[in-house]
Length: 168
Image (cartoon, rainbow, N blue to C red):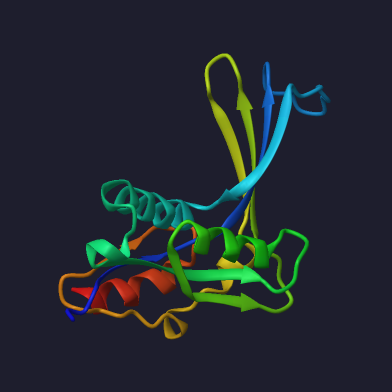
């Protein structure tokens, strides 16, 4: 049997905390929000889930296409943001989570997002948490022929640079 093609994503895993409002508050002002939601995000994890969903939509299963999606990154160890639930979510989406490390002493990354409802403008404040602890020496890329590696910059640049060079 042929070696599967692997799409590898090296990047962030965040809990997104989204508030919807009619307008942004002024400095020192408190407003009532029109809604709140929490969900799994981070540019890296979003890329991995999008790839897995696209593959699944074409065949019902990424594995049947001979393609796998693998996520490399980090979550907090046993934090209140559901790091174990996050990994379970990714697995249900069809993402190989063997490249995700659990980091002691830090929380899973968070993104606090405030969205103005009338125009969709947003303000995002990221607390990197475990994403700031992703280091190149801990990322073992499969680098099989025909595979792809995607990077984004919600993890340290000094992590992305050497990994990018090894993929050239």
